[in-house]
Amino acid sequence: MASKRGALIVLEGVDRAGKTTQCKKLVQALQQVGRPAEMMRFPDRTTTIGQLISAYLEKKSDLEDHTVHLLFSANRWELVPSMKKKLEQGITLVVDRYAFSGAAFTSAKPGFCIDWCKKPDVGLPKPDLVMFLQLSPVEATLRGQFGNERYETSDFQKSVQQKFEQLMKDPSVNWKVIDASQSIEDVHDNIRTHTLNTINTAENTPLGELWK
Ligand code: ADP
Ligand code: FDM
Image (cartoon, rainbow, N blue to C red; front, side, top):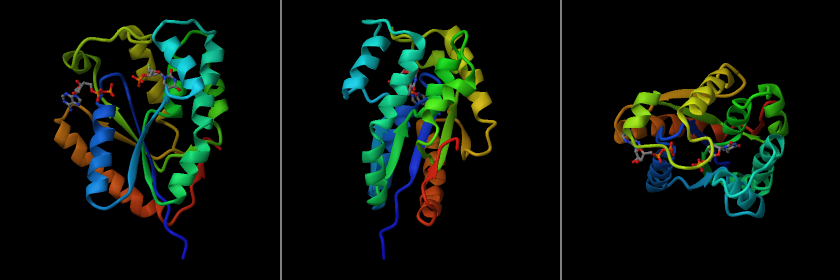
């Protein structure tokens, strides 16, 4: 019998919602119960395309807005072969940001519509579960100040939040909204429960194609 596939689990949310903290804890928890799991993050700044994106985010270079949008998408596509291989091997992938950040951040810029922003990512491996860590701007501020990277301003983040809300209306994606204002442990318990349920379902369903 072919081995059962892993699940593709994505965490999304605004800056400081706790995505990185929770991705790490989730991978550890899955490994502890004998479920193979690995963390990934987008942008993956280690590739050649990722280095262009990183320089742009650090404001060391300027890129035209459509161009950088397509680079973020290319950075996901370049990793698709390795993602599919791992999923087929039964490894669950826990991903810190994905195409939803791509569409939300670019469509928060003037002159971009969400439909255009989604197009380059149509057909990517479809997450079995997308958990949106919901946190108000006031609570995010209590977790520390913004950094110095591009997009780290409160007006832009508010606009990004609205775009995420629009994306979450799409019933073709398995969204779960998580209250990220709880303690790290409570958020983790919630995320782990949803993930374990999803892993069991994903084992018996083929991997889908996003927004298709
Ligand atoms: P993100 O990846 O969404 O930007 P991080 O995981 O980097 O968020 O967390 C941002 C900051 O908030 C870190 O200092 C982290 O320790 C803290 N943090 C994360 N989750 C919580 C929580 N549930 N309660 C309080 N502080 C948190
Ligand atoms: N971002 C992230 C985008 O604009 N498009 C994308 O496709 C993705 C994946 O890059 F401001 C933005 C979101 C955030 C920045 O920051 C990445 P982190 O701290 O590495 O998540």
